[in-house]
Length: 409
Ligand code: 5CA
Ligand code: ZN
Image (cartoon, rainbow, N blue to C red):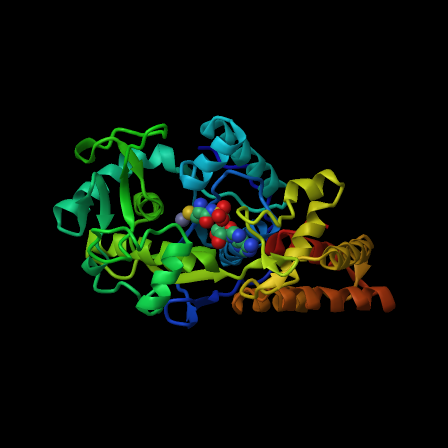
């Protein structure tokens, strides 16, 4: 699949800083030391509805990761998937009487537009589950042949016991895992499984549903976790720097994915850090396609909201916090954007070097975007109150805000 166009990232004076980021698996900050090419996999959308503010907040967090790394003069190998075949997508297409593939195409196209408008840097590879199937089948066969997977009425399940490190991503106990598994796409109550937590790797073809040639597995379609693992291993290999997504993916998705990869390769860990963004709520409940309490990025854009203001609204919350979208959050961002734009529109102003370092330090410290915004606010207030004589300082601020925060002033 094609991704979306990259906005330009201006080069900045001085030196970028290495990222320290919270890792769900160890529960603390890790100092990442990627080589010249940093490797990150971020779970993409299931395209059955438009991009909402919760999705955008999660992609914003990982866009900041890219920007911090680019600022250290590294290249970034960023891979993202599109879950373009899965139960919720098929159910929505059925409900609305439309073709599932057309629905996926349409919503993926809208996602690309939203990401472009928000200045999210694109992944190097943007891969759909359907196009990944030829790579998924041999992995499932290999897991089965090595005894890490088993068949149940034509479906193939992964045996969580085959990975000695199972449980290390989320750190949850079996009871909590069982609850979340039932909530998030698993089938812990299906009779005949070796362990209730075992997730499906390959689902045998069902009447009226799309299916693909699965070689010795028979016709069917892939499970959710193996989809991301196949794509990540194909393009990034083991031991990549960050596996990213929203906090609702820590278990089972990233736990199972890591176990699939670790069982397949015998290596540990799949990723050096498992990074999870908090959940955005609306009216007191997590924004989710299944509940329908959504604020769409595309709708805000149609209503004439500047995408830079949407981006600033996302940046005003720490990525790990759970937070609530309100009209006030957006209004505050619109006001802030106006003040920043006015402040950088003058030819000179207060010195900017220290501000660039403050933004760098804030982001390197577990992506503390709110601290970065406060630093820009302080410079803006000085510009408003006293002005300054540094020629070109507003241009430096404008480039730093663009390069590090993805906001075009
Ligand atoms: N296709 C899978 C991942 S492989 C999936 O979870 N798709 S999704 O469309 O449901 O979500 C896409 C991303 O947005 C995921 O990282 C998810 O954790 C994140 N996300 C979903 N809802 C919210 C929310 N309310 N707040 C923050 N992030 C969210
Ligand atoms: Zn995923």
